[in-house]
Image (cartoon, rainbow, N blue to C red; front, top):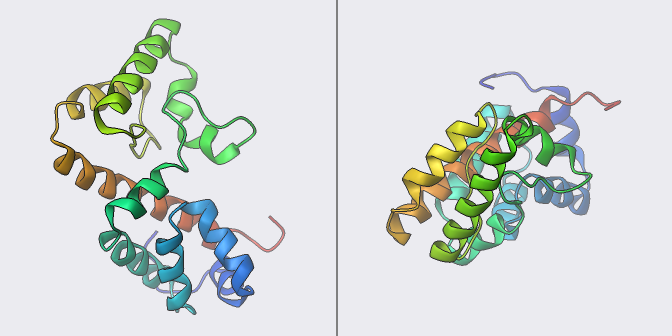
Length: 172
């Protein structure tokens, strides 16, 4: 979303009491530091201002902050039960064959063994095959390279989630 106007959800977010705003941000990203930085930037005049603040906060997260953010994401192919955001974002895995789902499970475990955290990708709009290909490609990365890819992917996910937050109407 690239808009210079202030959508109703952004106006509502800006007006939230700090604890409620922190909760909304934590649903977008589990990093407390990322949320703290965005809270400190309120009020945001436009959604683009919010997105820029998110990108800036993401670029400054430490390795521990990134680990905290990743801990809020389930493995690809296993969305959190009862979590519509997780299910929506991983929709591309829903129609995958059992063989491909089993392959993704094995790849997820190998990736986690190598890097110590879940394979993280902005899965919105990707097919199961694209996600499989990405984990296969990325599993050979150095930990430093992978950390920067994860930072980029988290930034994409955060933008999508923030866009949904600021586009929500009052009765959603």
